[in-house]
Image (cartoon, rainbow, N blue to C red; front, side, top):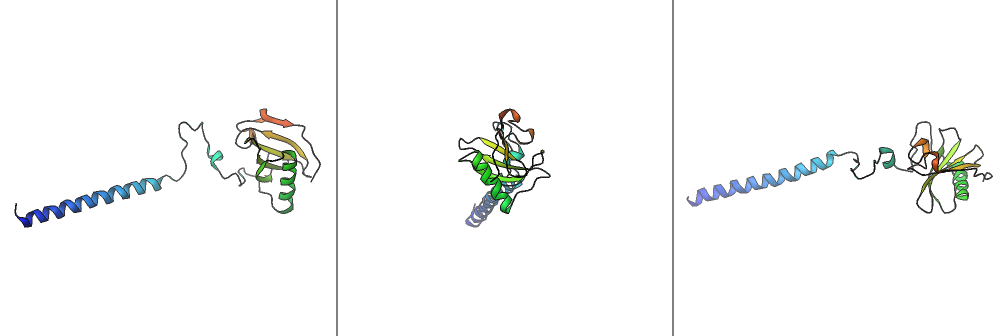
Length: 152
């Protein structure tokens, strides 16, 4: 093979290699971008979309996040009922109570504090991703009832 043919072959091989690398990079980029929502892993224990949602956002139809003085009252009452808790969100309740606060207790347990219209604590429901909210995992079996306090 003369020098001219070797140069042509070398250029062709180089272009083919560059094309293959570009194809691999483009293909992996496109496949990574195609996954738009998290998929539960087989070992995730059945993670649901609800568990993956932002805990600071209302998650059920008919519930709205509390704002202003109502939010302040609900947060204060929840922290009085469960000192040291972290408030995830406070919202209206579509299960029959008036308001609720979704919290994480100091031990890491999720719970929901239920209130009446005057922000008196009716009960603290523990367990599950939303504290047994809406009959979800944890259900009512973890409910602490009879917890009552005056409005804040």
